[in-house]
Image (cartoon, rainbow, N blue to C red; front, side, top):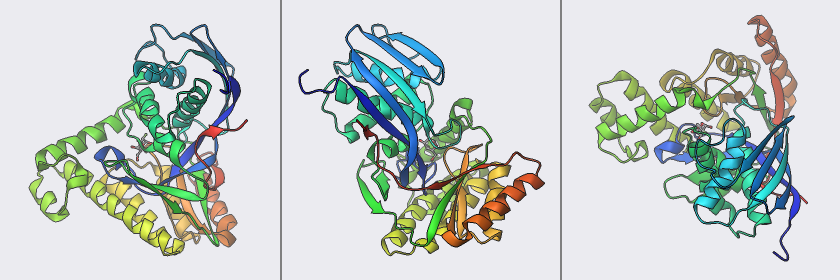
Length: 364
Ligand code: GAF
């Protein structure tokens, strides 16, 4: 145990996905970046086999013996699940006390759950000297979410929280697991996050329904995943179900939009990314059908007020929108969106100017 930190402070960031939505579980491409906002854990190791978790005035005491999928409920399952997944794989994780504090709102589509998993993963990895790399921690955080919390997500959020670096977006090819860091040079532009304050939950069935539709379409097309569709026109011609045709169209075109965005970022052409964000939003609204009214009118009002583009982020049915806008039109765009919410009789949204921050790590 010598040389290992037995206590300290760790941080797991939330994320926004610049583009590449609902592509991860189709073996495709995603392009997220980590936010400075996230979950911080004050943690200390203890050797009595107990995980003691504290967050937001709530506490959970989890005996590690007997920890299994389904044995812990609610928010604590996301954290305890990481310890459970590590132990299942034979990693010698004993007890710990973790006190979490968060500045990323839950249900806002900014991945507070992945932040919770990933801060727990890095803290346990360091305190127990497991020697796992950030990339090696990703499947444990994902298993916590899928098996222990029972939410059937892909790997986007955990990869973003663990693998992102400051001032870069992470281009991840989910099938190969290969990733590259793409400089996110905004120049005179800003990315504004609009939390529409419509609560989103991935466990409510609609997310799982989309996944099942994609799997069914891939099966009918005879490909391992929708990532493998080479000729969209031909694939659409072979599918009879109009719903499945829409889902396929979104996934195939969204993967291309990720590649196009990366090309534009590499060319220093951030302004041109706006059109791809708009196209992604329309595809998520009309073909994937996961948008919600507040997201739609946010993008419309922002573009009318001068934003270059915008789109809903995350699983959908609530959460946040990102807008790409010139720094000198930020206030105009924000005011136009706020006014649009008032016209619709909705409570004003919350705003955050996004910057690309480092992934999960020890702070002290
Ligand atoms: C949620 C999921 F957790 C991700 O895995 C991803 O599928 C995303 O929705 C949609 O792109 O954030």
